[in-house]
Each structure stands twice: as C-alpha cells, then as structure tokens.
Length: 139
Image 1 (tube, helix red, strand yellow):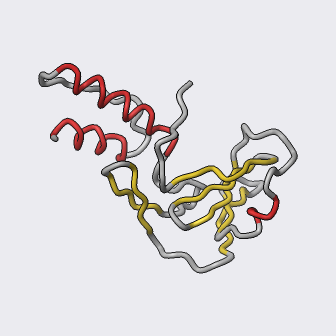
Image 2 (cartoon, rainbow, N blue to C red):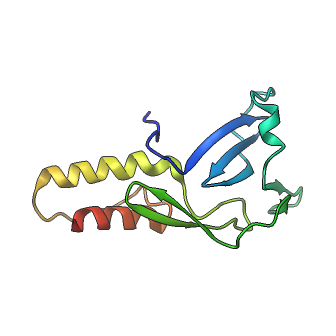
Image 3 (cartoon, rainbow, N blue to C red):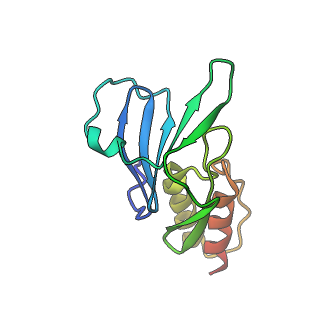
C-alpha cells in the first residue's frame, strides 16, 4: 500500500473510536471513519480546536456541527493543482486525498509512454482525479 505523503495542505492529525481529525488547509474537521477501531486519542488537545464535526444520525445521513464559522468553500493545493473543498451533507468534502498516490502513479505511467494514450481512470472517485490526469498529460 502506498501512502499519500506529498500533501502539504492535507493532513490526518489523529484518529480514534471511528473518527479522524483532519487538516484541510487551515480548517480542522472531524469526520467518521468506521475503520478506526482503537479507543485512545494520541493528541486529545488537537480535537478541541476542530472547526467542525460531522455526526451520523441513527436513521441514516447526518449533519455538520460548526464550532467556528467556515467559508462555504475553501481551497487546498496538491502539487500544481488547486481544489475547492466544501463540507457536504454526507460527511465528504468533495475530494479523497488518499487517492493522490493513484493520480501520481497514473501520471508517471502516461509520461513514460511518450505517446498518446486513452486512460480509463478507475481511481476517479471525484472529478479532481480526472482533472489531475488531464492536466499532467497536457503539460
């Protein structure tokens, strides 16, 4: 498994008990993640500075609770790309940052071919992945 380690504007700050604490630029969010099963927080003080938290409801869906007023949309960078980030009504932000390793892998493969290729991008959870591939190929 590859780790998306080249992000400067995205970072997982901590994880605990089905939630992750993430930094998206200068915004700190708490979002659910059922794969996080350990109970201890490594950095309990960091959880107190979260700007917003998404909580799932018992009947499906959920909602954001804002501790501070956030911009409706803000931007983060990955390499030469700029993404608009927005808390959605179903816990997402419009981008899956862990997919950056797939974007980079695909771009490297395309550049090595030095010929026109058609690519079926099965990693494209969001339009951001598709845009990244197109932008790199056109350069």
